[in-house]
Image (cartoon, rainbow, N blue to C red; front, side):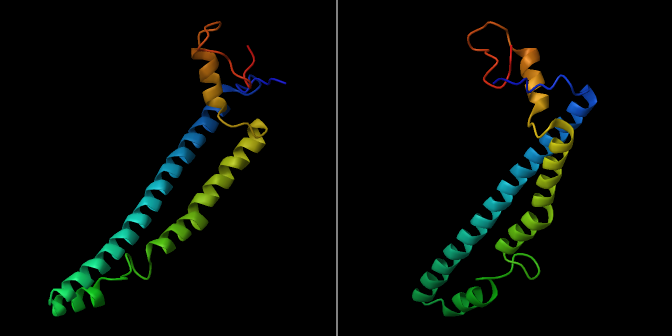
Length: 141
């Protein structure tokens, strides 16, 4: 069964609003990915720092190694937080709330359909009948 995901039953402003909300969520997903990258890079740097401390200590630079180990290894990256705590706070307090509102908007306004704005764009911009421009299984011609 093919359904027209471009949702001709919805007004243009609603579709545009859903599209902007979807775009905002996609941007949040990118930010979240960067936050996870920050988390992983910070963790890797701390492990590399521990290797540096061991090597400096082995080379006889005990005072520097001791200072690095005491003041930098395992240090909070922001007040009272390691990066995993920042990620957890972001996920629980912002990302999950954002996703829930996106799902609510799609459910209330478009029967749960995703990317209605893009489906309309595809219908508008494709060349009907061209072999590389098929409507696809969820877009009726």
